[in-house]
Image 1: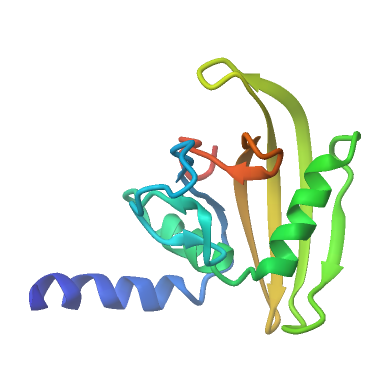
Image 2: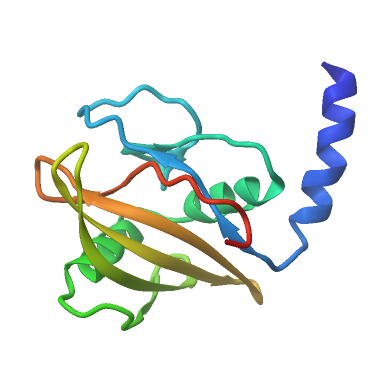
Length: 155
């Protein structure tokens, strides 16, 4: 265990200083209380992040976890907008962090028969910019929930 920690910790510390474009894999089990496979999205029980190989996932998890309830509501509002590729920008009044969500085209998830939407989420905090590509689908309650999206870094 110590050897693994000694190998992984320097990589995480080094990459936490890098400004990169991350793709993260997420999972929505469709249940009201999903099984926690990874880290909770924005400290919310609504969805979880699925850990994958690659350091970009670590950075994406850290960014998404910086969201609070206010930020998640703003993401939901951005996904409600009828137009695609129009960025929605806000500054969290409590944290002072600046977020930007650019929703993509709407689509239908054939497996779950839910409306879905790709989006790019950006965060500017402490002079460091981070980005993550996500997919959100409507839950049975009508909220947009981050779901599983398998993409390779740089794609």
